[in-house]
Image 1 (cartoon, rainbow, N blue to C red):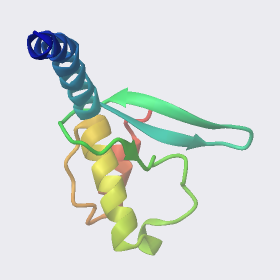
Image 2 (spheres, rainbow, N blue to C red):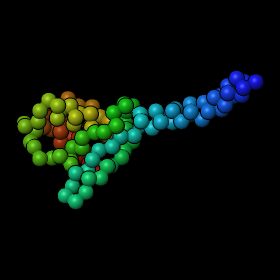
Image 3 (cartoon, rainbow, N blue to C red):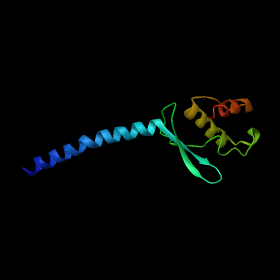
Length: 108
């Protein structure tokens, strides 16, 4: 008799667990953030992604604008390409400074 009761209790817990996991995955695929690095604040800015990815944290193009296009490393270019793709829906290779300006022109 106790085995049946334990199974019913487990089944009742799964009733809430499965939708919770599904909601978390849906949220993780659709919401991202970047850190707004201003003088007096380190705020997270959340946004809806334009494409699905499990990457949650992105590097903002505007918070870290202390370098020129020629000084960008491959890793920095990749971070900016990801930001432009998932934040604005702009797919670019960042081969030229003009492509970087096209993404930065989308700033609200």
